[in-house]
Image (cartoon, rainbow, N blue to C red; front, side, top):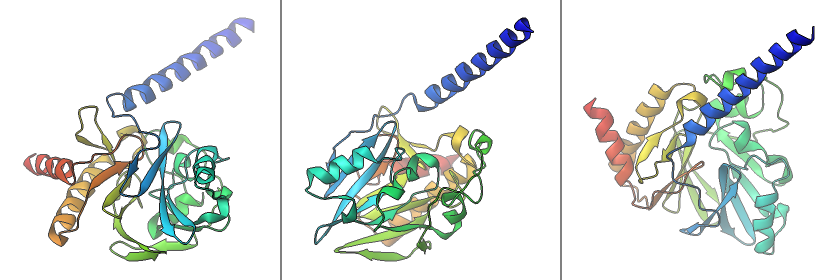
Length: 259
């Protein structure tokens, strides 16, 4: 019996090591998140390996793009405290998608209107599971979150003195979204910044469909160009921002079209 326990323990240890190695290699070669970076009025707040953004709305209120991994939202609350604000100052949370590391702190902001693409609501609320190679292994359970305002592709929403434009960016999850706010394109996990500054697609192991993700990025580039919407920077959640406008998304779309 002791030998069986040792063998089972050894197998489990190897599985944990293998899983850790896969996660580590998945995020290698990416530009680190710059905690505290301020771009066009937004402040990037790191929460472990992920980040969220705090966007001033005027009149003592802010919006968040995602709410981090920490259920206590310590990093976000510290940033609010630095501004002389408390959790009640957060009037809106825009979710790029419903993975756990982006919704962790939502409950800490009870006055916030929680928003996500309509297709993403069941995942954010924990009524369905994700379908990526790794994420499909996670148990499905209610998150305690209620999305109070489902969003739709192409709509614009007014948040205080700020306008947010909503774009469907399915692939990483079925209802992933990008938000264009004050010239900043927040893309969640649908894209990352490589260590040499190029745009790369979502991490395959955590994505429902990387092929769909790639197609969505190319389509988003075409839409932004056609509408002549000003983009100052592209802001992923797991890596540093690309501050050369649409240059990197253009290059990615051109490369995808050439395949």
